[in-house]
Length: 129
Image 1 (cartoon, one colour):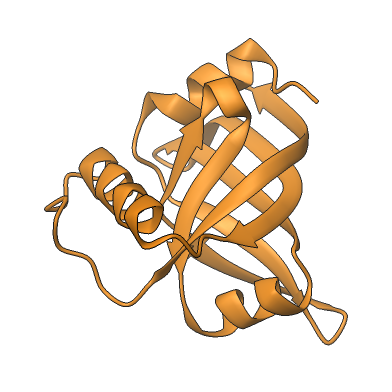
Image 2 (cartoon, one colour; image 1 turned 180 degrees about the vertical axis):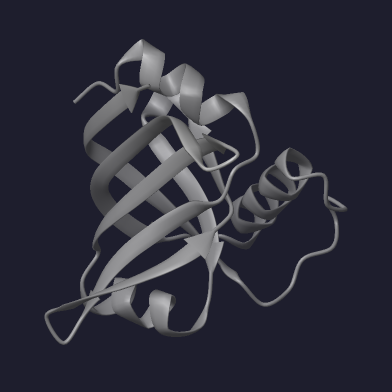
C-alpha cells in the first residue's frame, strides 16, 4: 500500500496532534497523540502509555486521523489504517522519542514513560478543502 504523495506532504507539513483509534472490548477508544510519519517506509511512529498501549497489545489494528484547521475551518484531513507494533529495542525506542520530540519542539532527550510504537500503514485516505 502506498500513501498518496499529497497525503505524505500533509502528514509531514506541521506538528499537529493525531487521534489514535484503538479497540477495547469491541468498542472504539480514541485519544490524541504526537506522531511522526516516515514516508519512505509508510510507517507512523508514536509514543503512548496506559489504555491505548494495552489496547494495542490486545488488538494491534489501529486508525490514525490527522486534521489541520484554520479558525475552525478544516484545511485538510488524512486518515490512516494500519497495524501497530510495540518497539522493544531500547536504542530504536530512544531514537523514536528523540525524533518525535524534535518535531514538536520539545527537548529531544527528555521523555516520560511512554512506550514507542510503530504503525505500518495499510490504507490511507485524505481530503483537502
